[in-house]
Image 1 (tube, rainbow, N blue to C red):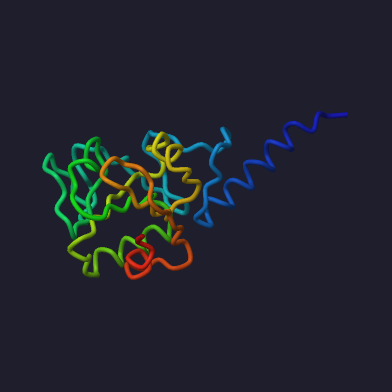
Image 2: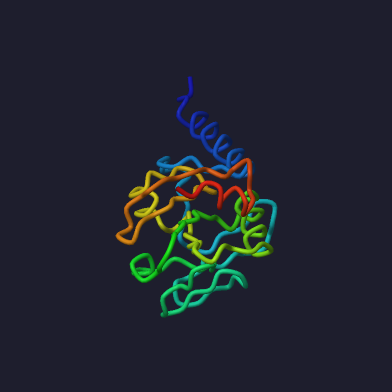
Length: 170
């Protein structure tokens, strides 16, 4: 009789693949923990580059050494929370997540209120921030104060609009 371990591993990987294709990632399962190396998007044969804090490949969220301006959409980097005035929303984004892409499209095509800065955090690589704020799914928005303490959070998985993000602000 063969051991059930290989079948269990295969079932676990099949479940993880189904969740990824659906836009969800189970957090904490070492069998499906995302890699920080270049990866391939589901359904694609092209390799995706992992973004760095120094240079953004995204035309929307920029990153610079200066403090973020209110009414902006910017990449997360160390120190940006303390340097940014006004309401700050951390947007936990994954480049392969359809809901994240829809929310980002809404952010880029909409008008961000002057008193709000949306800070894009890479869901796949920012594991310490995910743990700090208890984030377990992409499209999570965490509103933080000047010291980085969480004020409120909302998952915008089913309503991926800038209006929903703005309405979730404390």
